[in-house]
Every structure is written in C-alpha cells, then in structure tokens.
Image (tube, rainbow, N blue to C red):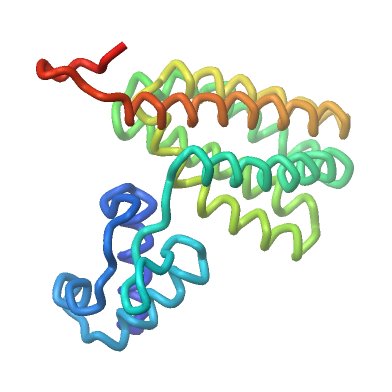
Length: 225
C-alpha cells in the first residue's frame, strides 16, 4: 500500500472515530511526523480528505477537521433524507425479498447485542452497514450508490453521538426492522416513509446530543440546567 493511501486511511479513521476532533488543525509536518511518513504522502492524503469534505481550510496553508455542529448535521440529514428515502423506495421495487428476509433476522436480534459491550456494539453496526450495503446494491444505480457512499462517510461521524445511548440504538433497530419489512413486502411508499421516520428521529437525537455536549458545566462537573 502506498504511503499516501496509508496516511489517508489512518487520518480518515481517526476523524470518523473522533480521535481527531472537529476543528483540529491538520498541519503537514505534524501529521507526517506522527504517522512516520514524508510530507508528500500527507499532502496527498489531506487533499483527499478535503475532497471528501472531512477537512476544510482553516487558513491559506492549514486544513482542519470539518465541523460537526448543529448546522452541518442538519445539512447532512437534508441530503440523507433525499437519497435514502429514494433508495429505500427503489429497493422495495427492485430488491430481492429473500435477501432482505435473511437480513431481517439479523436486525431482529440486534438490540440484544447492545448488552455485550464494545464487541456487541461493533456487531450491531456491522448489521446496520449490511443493510445499507444491501439497499445500495438493490437500487442498481451507480450514481445514486456513489452519493449514498459519500453521505454514509459523513454519517459515520454522527453515529458516534449515539454510542453511549443504547436506548436510542434499540429504537433505531426497530426502525430498521420496519424499513426491511416494507422492502420485503415490496411496499415502496412505506419503505420511504419508514426511512423518513428513522432519519427524523436520528436527527433529533444527534442535535440533542450536540446541545448536551455544549452545555456549560458547574464547578462540580454537572451541566447547568
């Protein structure tokens, strides 16, 4: 693997996982030293991150990790609703019910995984990703698939906000189940509506989490009501 690809993958994962927080400066020299590569691969990696929308210009010479605030999250969900609602509709029309039926069984078991710590959470998200992959394949539209992949990349950052809220994840699993049931039944309108409901609730939770995280704290560490 080329050094630029290694640098890109490392930086992208750190941004998606929150290791590199929004607003963190991405100076070439610092990142090159940290990753153990020269500046040229880091420069190429940073250009790709900027093209992905994961990095933005802080000045003429320095990039920073893109913002993850209420405005950027709301903008993302506007795009997701348009893309994912249509994708669910097409999946209900074009997808293989048998394949989605098999996936349904895994989604039905997903809430129980949340009692198994980090390993269970990782498996939970693998199931969610499998559903996204199956819908993306079912739409049979390369242009829509590319747009979905871009939205999913940014959604991975928002996903972190629900990691410490298992009750939201359990509810989300039931929402995913309704989407799959609609696709299996070939009900395009219901699949799109179920997706709309899921995204609406997910957005409300993400915005509430952002607001909670930015609330001022008292000297004892508790948030001010």
